[in-house]
Length: 516
Ligand code: BES
Ligand code: MN
Ligand code: ZN
Image (cartoon, rainbow, N blue to C red; front, side, top):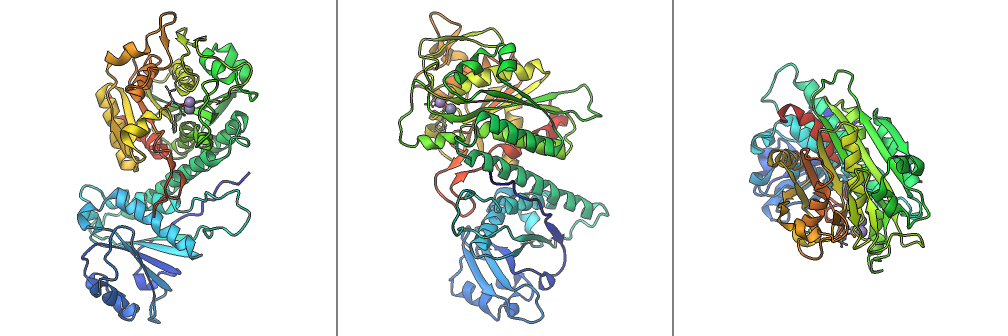
């Protein structure tokens, strides 16, 4: 089992560029930016910077890279990387986070062992409402995301070198208040923690189903959550049966691996009796589809059908560690969905812990089943505001593709709260409606409802199913089936698990002062 990544701090420096002791100095560069905008740079590279800009060899298009040695004896850094930042008007948290990731990945490809990422004077103003602390947090997140190693089971020569020592150089001076340095260091630490949590979730989502059973998932997730300071309780199959979780047990019947229910708690000692955030994550460690078996092509991807659950566990680590001001409960129902001899069949009827009956039309619609019992349990434990995260429907990939998470829920202010938090955290999402008009598609002649609404509006009917288990509480649902896994490598995102939703969930309790 690969070990978790280790968390060496990122150093924050305001020294002149010439004095930064690293192998690689990274400068984000805008399209059309003048070479003279950074003092001494041209001299330090013996004219190379002016030359590549004048010859248009380097245009500063997004993620374009230009490496050159630093030749002046008076400069300490050994090499310079100009990384294209695109047009200045597009600059902001998303751009800087991705630039930071791309820079670390490019450095690791070249086995470079120390990297300084420079936030130059003038940048925060270009970013509009974003302050230096926000930018530094995003840079720290991005640098940390660049440390992720997806090839944990490769025994030969790795494509990427080890994580380099990291420095952020910050020379923005318009705010000279005495609290400023402490605030900026705190922002870097926060970004480091959030990036690290995203990586831990990515690591779990990459794990193969044979090694990552529900039991193993529970073991690893408990380690991560408690390591951050959250309380953990793991319920086994007997305790799950005692809670009458017929939906979770129904999905688990087809597998030889017993199910687990993870419960995480963050209980700040000084929390007022205010809101309690309930996070619920889909934890299917492998989804074959069950008796409604999936086609063979691409089925290996279904090892990551526990991405929502991993996001909840890793967010709980960050929530506890960063000392969120409110109580938070995390619930992750974990099981395989297998077509064993005792598996549930189409036409079967299951009774949820809440007492509602479900006619199974398609055993491949298993995520909503385990989440139904999970949402109910989060409410039972005292949650007042709910968010669930799940690789729930193929239909959301058709609707929004691989870059945008589907966002559902009610009431609108709560959905909007989640959306704005996600936006800032770098998780793109877009709202889709959950009008009751489509509830007819879930009508059953024999039970309260079915588990499959058919072909039309598949992601919406899935959300409508979940809504039945939210007890009328404010609830948001993130369908990450498209965004959990990158099929194509990008400069800032290798193929594989993306760590989507971790930072959104972790940041959400910090916005509680604005909740209704
Ligand atoms: N885990 C899948 C959804 C999924 C699809 C995730 C593609 C990631 C990539 C989910 O359990 C599923 O099988 N959903 C079915 C629902 C249908 C049977 C109503 C689907 O989307 O086809
Ligand atoms: Mn399925
Ligand atoms: Zn699934």
